[in-house]
Length: 146
Image (cartoon, rainbow, N blue to C red; front, side, top):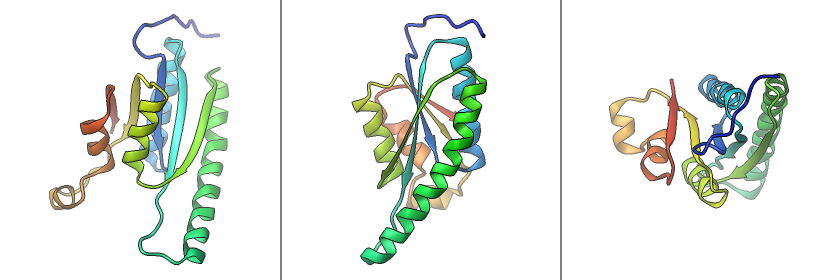
């Protein structure tokens, strides 16, 4: 079993997960950290509904998203077991940045780990990326994984 020591800084780590390569890497970074420090790992996936959508379309999209995230969580739990770390997983519906920030506040998270996608300057100016919003509005430190 890896040596874990108590730390006063990062007792709860929240990872933003969307199934992408960078979010998988963010999970790996958090799990790696947990092998060195005694931290609780929480993983949050947020299904973003289409706008506007009929109720039937919305239900179908959300069912697909839940299935996609649950399949990804199976692999995440296997990696966590190999790292001898317990993870807690959540699936919510809405805007990913808002839900990550809210979950971090309500769960008193000490660190948020998210993947950073490269987007064009125009896209950033018009929409802003999820990681940029989390970085700007989170109450705690944010680790961006590239």
